Image (cartoon, rainbow, N blue to C red; front, side, top):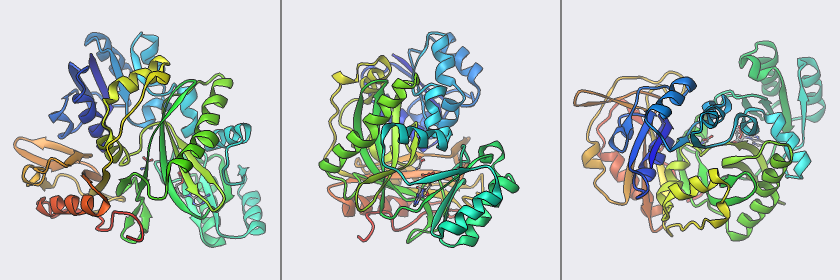
Length: 421
Ligand code: AMP
Ligand code: GLY
């Protein structure tokens, strides 16, 4: 098979790395990729957003299967455009990707399918929203309806910060059209997990769960980021809870999407809060998580490619995936200044020596080559993933590798691992 991965981050490096190992894959391309992905695949300089160029590349190179990493091209209809030209692609159509691109659509689906989530109200008027918040009290959560690159959610501990979040979206219009409407919802308390399942339009197959470390600073302090690290399996999530998430969240969502004429194929990523009574949905995403993919895929013992194909072909029922018993842990190395203004172009040395351990893989998230030099080219730059008999072993392995990386302008959190040790 001739396969194309679309995207350029750590998630796409993990996808390319695991697909490159498949005996089914003869040729692997990535658009646009990065310096690490170039070691697994042939990178082609086409932006993930350039739908027309991706479609014509696939026709010209007779690509058999496209795997779309990020949400933006899915929401923009890349899978639809490829299907129209007879090119098979993994991922939802634009109609199904609405589960991620509109939080109110996701909430309506929860109501329709009986999926437990936080109680919420929708607002377009700032005064009405503030009156509701004042009557409700804090803590409370304010969310822009549309895609806001992870910046559209404010968990407000006091009323003042909720009012500011309302003004930011509805008055200052900081998120443009994505913030024309906001959701105000109840604060949920508990452990957060990211749960992943493959879906083929009618059936779903659980993958695994992970925990993501979204805050920039150690001890979960500081601003939200795309994710500074991840671990899998998710602590506290046994087979019983996993079954409950499939029965109460994933399968009802897949059935409801099908009934609504928007059959969902691809990865369904449920961001969940494990509240005292039941897991409740925080959000749906329509793709693998980043950096969650960097801990899920290294734990997969089975070849992922037949499973992704089966999701596309509607035959997931025939797939059985095997997982390694090991724990996986990924530490993200980011460039100084991330997330606000990451420093670009600094040189990274020592990766070859750091990456010797066979239980370790250094995924590239934002790098480029300049002759023989490897340069940082993004906010999140590397994701160092290690496997171990337990998280302590995986953590020791990951941080030992990080200590060998010579990159003074990079930083990471030193506390990635199960919370509370
Ligand atoms: P979302 O993009 O909706 O997943 O929200 C981003 C982050 O905000 C989540 O990962 C949670 O940490 C937090 N969050 C969102 N909704 C709630 C809620 N209702 N209660 C508590 N925290 C929340
Ligand atoms: N790590 C969070 C996400 O991929 O959305």
